[in-house]
Length: 299
Ligand code: G4P
Image (cartoon, rainbow, N blue to C red; front, side):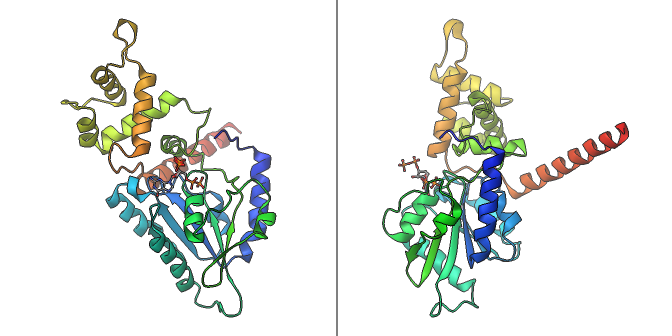
């Protein structure tokens, strides 16, 4: 996937969604359970207003179950938000989401009119898979047609529910920087901006901090490496990914680390916790305040 997020496109998508969103009775946002914050679309909190929202923490088969439970509780602190977990090939559970949608819109009379549900999610979180599961058939993948056009092509679901897919053109969160790295680790963005080996190093540093036992067991290491780079070197030695003169082939190590994380070979691991993103938000706010002060000082 090679998508560039141009400001003009972003502005257009925002305008379209802003137009369509108020016509909806409920929103389903699909996120990746390993990164529920980084994989959220930045438009949703801004444009949702009072519309009820179901967060689907998808790919739970790959995520750390304890952390996923903490995310659910954290997300549900917000008014009008319910958070459920899901994994592919679970039709009964997917249909439970529609029942929840009905419970969350008690004022709506489905005998009179269809319940209008908008589904959205940044690329690669599993939105199409969920739509197909709900529809019970393959539904063509969303292209980049305007949201208004898409809105006329709703998918009919049981119990008089109409599902409105959104344009595929929804950009992910690109700041703070850590969000970009986490998205790149899961494969949600293949950004040319982030260097492949830097992404793997970010992963190595994090896994060593959060899941040292799993990582050491997987790569047969007896001693805990002191940091991510030392971990990558140790993997290169163990797997004999060595170039001329015994220099560690970090590109090969990066491939292994990223592919094994994405496939779940390293176990069920999450890349962020509510506490981490709260801390990052505090740091970003402090940094913004510092910059503002610096600017004021200059004037
Ligand atoms: P999107 O519409 O949000 O872009 O995502 P899509 O449904 O195309 O899913 C993206 C990838 O994630 C697909 O894999 C899909 O099979 C996988 N996926 C979806 N839901 C789950 C889940 O609950 N768990 C896991 N482990 N994977 C999930 P792919 O490799 O891109 O394609 P394919 O090999 O399935 O064809």
